[in-house]
Image (cartoon, rainbow over all chains, first blue to last red):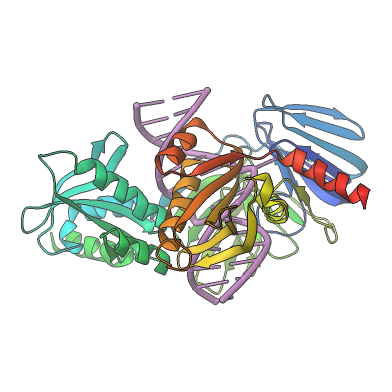
Length: 219
Length: 219
DNA sequence: GACTCTATCTCGGTA
DNA sequence: TACCGAGGTAGAGTC
């Protein structure tokens, strides 16, 4: 990883055109070739960047990075304050927990949390516009499509509505109703769900995990 | 900006829990206090980070960053290879062009570009599911909702369709028709627009800007 | 390669 | 502050 501290100005042309006036910044070049220009603030996002794969041509006072889709980043170096290079090696990578996949797995095991009497038919039930997260039956034997989201938004409601439209065309399934299961649900999505006749259920992920480990302790 | 190259392992607890096994990485601390941990690849996104504002407590072999919403980042330093600090100063910031906001402003000034006789009623017309970019009347006095996008996609068509559904419930407005104004429009979105009875208009942003500056030259 | 959906999205605007 | 929408979204998974 090459780290250059320099007084520079930058021009980007591609999906938009952007210009950075002259100032002192960090230019970071990673081993995969990606280039990022950082100011001393503004969270982790660089002011300007160019992802790999790209072509980097460095002259003493002008760097030009370009890629195959015609994007171009030109860095004009007015003064180089520091220029270092470090070998970091391969990174073992990040281990995550708490994403939608895990929430879906927990609900697949305990669908009755969403509604009394709910039973799982299968996960990732396929339709021709994509898989439904969970397909279940309710206490009256009616089919229920469940869409699992960390944050239920209008788009989630629409997504589920499209699935329901699809599933209702299958005579073995219809009528199918929908449940949107989410950790949070903004009011706009709530309005939309009501309009589409979809039930929305707020799920307590931490509570579910808790219950999970309690059970493990019991057996 | 402080740049530390170190063999470290990292634990994050907050919106999810995540762990980074021991490896050599770059730890970047910006003047605003934000901390980012970069590997030598994976585009500009760090493996782990903590935005400002936060509290950073540094011991020789353990850094702990925490914020008011209970997120916590713990960096265990096994070996510090390099530790430098640079004063960068305030950044003048990025100048952008070509964004949707500008396109919307141009169309608000000259709605007749979209359709002969179109007149603006107001920008950002509010509905209970969000604001419509432009509300206009056509040459026959009928209301027209305009959604402005750089790239018109299926989601844009659906968004406009939702607005129309909403606006049509207002007896003072209905019947309301829709125009999707975009610089580009993939075939799928075009099909969708037709199905939803929405007009799609390709707008030449560069041409609009040109016309704009021509007028400025005239007066 | 194109399409779809997630994201500790980030970032900016506004009520 | 919270919510909402745009993004050079990026990135992962699927077809």
